[in-house]
Length: 467
Image (tube, rainbow, N blue to C red; front, side, top):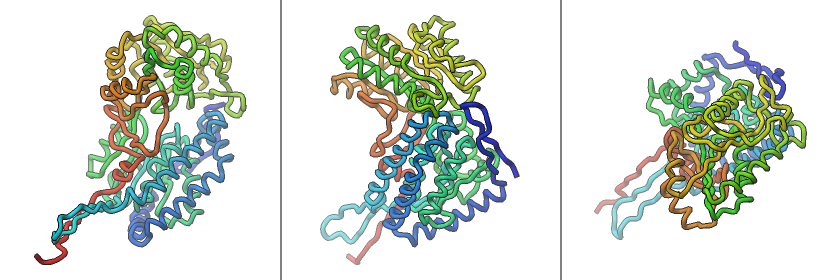
């Protein structure tokens, strides 16, 4: 029996200890999920599945205060921001609940008059879906897959990151209390080796992983060793923002800095690099720096704090190394770290930072930093901005800041990302597919396409009568 103790990034002290499943226990959970999946799909109408999952959402949201307090302790995000994750969970879940009947309905193909055939496309569940979630947004990452997978008639095994095992337990309790049948939704606490055994099993129907590029490669390699299951991957990002010369600079600066600093920059779609037209570069930088200097770094339980620690001291060291690499190559930091006394070497607290005089020879502009720092680079034209935006191994989101909608559409055609936003950033709309290109992953969650990924199409081609 293996145990794992979770420590808080706030002070390094233990928060809780969890017992992980043995290989035999994990396989038993998978077998139970397999048995439960047939009745969940065959014997439970979609309307009933919607009712039960809706009740699960209700119960989870009802515990928002406790959930936010616990999450803040686990990952270091300010408590008031953790409430936003609960609200975001509900927002996405409610949309998916409403979209399910149409998304899962048969597609009946039109037939000419007198045809003796009936043709349709059905969506059928994979059986058991394994969802491997990430610690930085444990509930928002989970809801993207858990809710549509359950509604589609799958059983779900959720594997949360060890840092947020408690979050998986909360969701599992909400499912049980809602009356979702035993085995249909389970939180499995397993290490990498046991998880690999589950991925190798022929009882598993589909896998969705959210995490690092390295982790995505490992999962894909593991899945290909013994099975041909579908694998969805939501991986890293180095998301750019482009501020055109006609942008509302105050609005752009406020939102871009928030997109870079929120959750201490620990989001796959955080703004990690900014390109600003030379005509407005100085004015934008001045506004952005002033905003960043106004953040308060400290313990997330303090209601005045707007920026908490990153997940651990190793992550903090990586962020600092990206900043130092840029400075050593000529970048200029605009934020005096002495304004943030909580930021100390050896801790998980990192001061916000904005750098100028940056270029793509620097890690801060090319590698995923996952921290509250951002580089701002001057450009002369839309064409130069597009070239730099696309000069990346990643392709998750990009944001354009402009008053010219037509220009934004032209730029969006050229930008190599899964999502292009105009005058907003770091945002997911559940009615739109959440997808990426390049090393940001493959497949899709959310929208009707998310239901497609969690089901398989079945073609029905019947001769209904003789000619």
